[in-house]
Image (cartoon, rainbow, N blue to C red; front, top):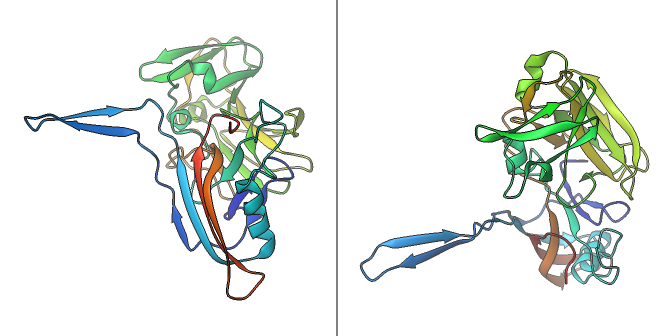
Length: 283
C-alpha cells in the first residue's frame, strides 16, 4: 500500500496511485548557472534553495485516478485549509515511493537551514536551547522530561492517511544515551493533537489512527543540561527506518503542467504531470 505514490491535498484529498508510472524523473533543480569568460575560465553561481521536481507519465490509467490528477492540475480539488489565501490553491502533498527518509536533507544530517535551527526543530513540551555544534545543530533540554519535535516546512507534520505504517528512528547519538524515548504524534486536519505512538529506545513504529492527517516525529532524550545533536534521524512510510537513509524530504508541491490523452479504449487515459516544490499557495 504505502510503497505506491500518494498525491493530493492533505486529508481526504490524499489519494494512492497504485499503477506504476511508465516514466519517472525526480531530478532536483540544482539552480546552477555557468558563466564562461573570454579567457575560457568558468564561474559558477548557485541559488540558495534547490527545489525538488518530479515528472511522471502513465499509460492506460484508470478513470478514477485520471480524474484525481486532472482535478489537481486544473486546481479544482487543490483548494484547502492550508492555503494562506482562501481564494488561492494550496500546495499538494507528494509522498514519493522512491524516497526512503522523508525528513529534509538538512534535518537528516542535523544541520539547520539558512535561517535558524528552529525551522527544522521545535520543543513539544518543556524548554530547550538550540545552538550550533561544530557543523550541525544541537539542543540542550531543561529537564529530562523535555520532548523535542521535528518540524515540516509547510504543514503541522508529515501528511499521512489512516492505516499507514510509519517508522521513526531517533538520532544516532540518542541511542547511546540509554534514556531516549521515540514518539510519533498524530494530528488531525487542523493540526490538533490526537494521540501518540511511543516506545522506549531509539525507534518506534505506529499505524496512523482514524482521523489522522499529519504525523510529527518527536523524541525525549531523557537527559537534562546535556547537548544532544540531531544527526542520523530517519522517518519512513511502509518500511523500517534505518541509519543509511539520507533525507529525501516530503516537499509541498504544485503541478506546473500536465497532459491528458484518452487511451484507444475508453475510459482509460494516458496522462503525465510535472510538479515542482513550492513554499505555499500557488499565486
